[in-house]
Image (cartoon, rainbow, N blue to C red; front, side, top):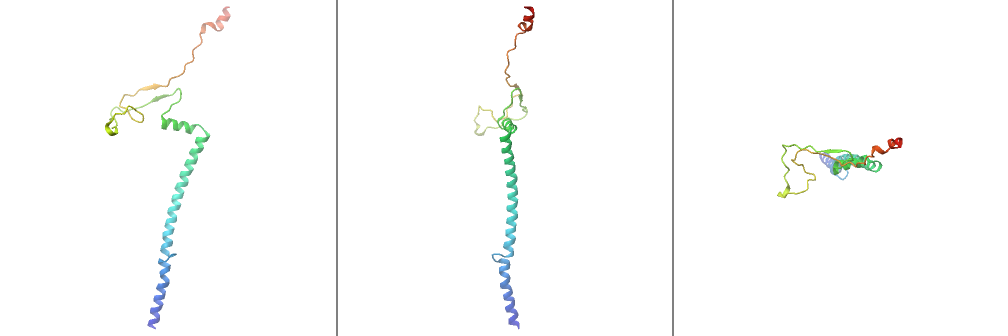
Length: 140
């Protein structure tokens, strides 16, 4: 009787081994569920990114507002008739140039010079002389 009990316990352990540690065991299923949850979160993040990019593409294709915004903030462009004003703190030290060389370009760098307002050049239409219009016809 004792031998039968020992054999049954050994068979029970042999049956349990694949259930816990085998190819389709509980531990493997738990690990795959964690990987699935992580992949689903990554897919959601990528979906949001793709939607943002698709919206940006649509804005760039359909109107000029997005192009204008990019031109203003990325290239520093201004419209005709606008005034570009740059505020610079007089107490802020000059940015260090890498390598110690002085670069003559100021694009993308802050200057310690005082604030200046530079208006855009405006094309001026020559004004008509007022002495020869309707008054000249009335007199003649």
